[in-house]
Length: 228
Image 1 (cartoon, rainbow, N blue to C red):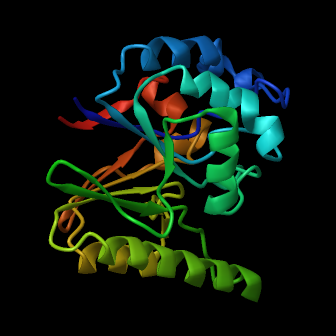
Image 2: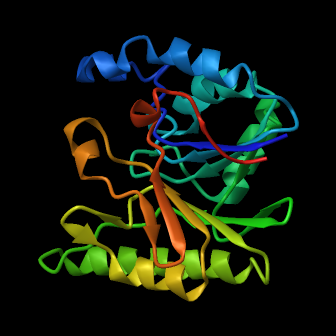
């Protein structure tokens, strides 16, 4: 029994948007995902930290979820910026029930538990001063969602999973970092960074929080083990 995490699988079994066009790091990536997830058991939990499927709606993403359903581990889904299939949790749960997909749940405006830990998270957001007011609204909404998730943790030690990095070289999201500090988050894992941008990642301890990048190409398509 263990908790694992990986982001940015970018599955495209129906949408025909294979990531292999982005270089050798993505060669044969679907089979590499199949091999690495194949060792997980029904007792394991896997956090999928956004950009799981290229499907533009649930119907187009169905083949990607069917692919993931074959692996018996429980899967907690975080929204990514390319998860166009994402709808309301009610509609997504209804879709999974209709298709007989039983291994999925959502990390969205809520908190899950794993042993003594609270599992919290949200998509997150990039925000810069020259962006439009709409982006400020989106950021504020994500901050509210994250705080809702963190509050639900109660007194449990917190493991947080975001899609967008809250910091990397040359960038910080102070609103999200402030929440991670306020709630004494033990570990924060994030995705989104690919290719040459991976060099700008920031990992390691910042104040009380250990940061790590979990985008699939960075991990070689092998989920990161968070804890037993």
